[in-house]
Figure 1 (cartoon, helix red, strand yellow):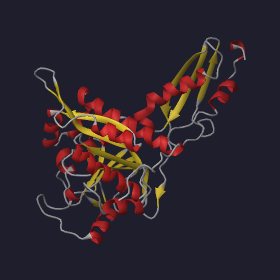
Figure 2 (figure 1 turned 180 degrees about the vertical axis):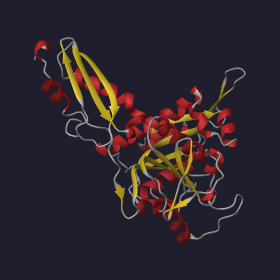
Figure 3 (figure 1 turned 90 degrees about the horizontal axis):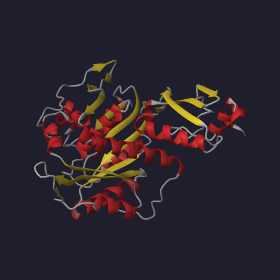
Figure 4 (figure 1 turned 60 degrees about the vertical axis):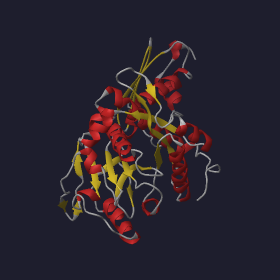
Length: 359
């Protein structure tokens, strides 16, 4: 094919095997290429992606350019513009929840910053343009209301709970319903019903992602979620020291046992960078989570250092500010993008779970 003979049909053919990251289907077949312009000096393509793909939009754009470069005549100038494409989320029966991807964020033990990572991950997805809900499923110790700075109780309309809105995020937590400081003393069946109610009786609207902040450790909530709706996968948060990694391995095994795929591991409190002298201190060790992830064949999504600003914002109920700060934002944006890449990979190359420990 000579450059002068290049036609629109040639570009369409070249894009026929380029797949939408959300569905894994050809962007030509799903009519996500609204326009192709072919000129003597090159090709301009408009590629439509849903808001679900927000965290990986630039990566998909670069992949599309490389894809076309490998299939069109050498030297062809290629431009790809990303535009918006709407695809409604399918409702999950019998829950009735309209969401494209549900992600459980768990940990093997408390005190590793799981809720901070879950909330910051939700804000990172929301900042990319995705429609995001955050469910605090830690019924016994809900901390999401505190770290996002919300105390109001959710409203009821048309016999449905209306999620609390904060900084563009839809939120639901037992902490919005019970009095602050009150203890929840429930057995398994009541816990099961409360989780299903917060899922099915809440008017979440149409979501790209629902991030579920799990209780620490292993227990009933993971079983309830796995039986109630399709989970895209789980993210496990841990710190670098050996004792935390042992508990993280148990959490990974628990998700495996209830058939929830592992999307990856996040190492929180990875190191401390002293603001006075710029020296790095590995207070809890460093790199342990990455090494354990490699050992288990689980993706490593990224690390978050000990950062005084992150702690202060959580205490002040201003966790959303983690994404407006250039320094802290890059940690969570990286984790969000890597997590979405893991969801995409799950569809085409389910990682082997044979090496994971069994409880």
